Image 1 (cartoon, rainbow, N blue to C red):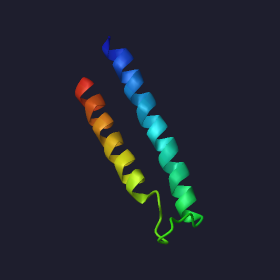
Image 2 (tube, rainbow, N blue to C red):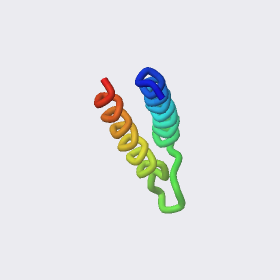
Image 3 (cartoon, rainbow, N blue to C red):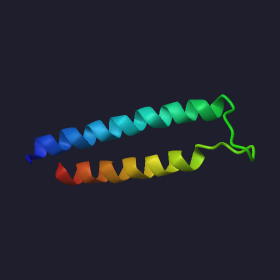
Image 4 (tube, one colour):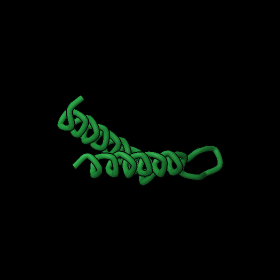
Length: 63
């Protein structure tokens, strides 16, 4: 796989993560809570942001 293809795939995944994080953030801001009254998506958001950083680092290494 060529560098441009890898770059495109990584950028697409980063964009996908950004999209889902924005949806999850809006759900939390609108009061979506789990049974304990805590935002139920906060740990998922942190995981997604961590994965995004990993993908961004991989992209930076390709460039």
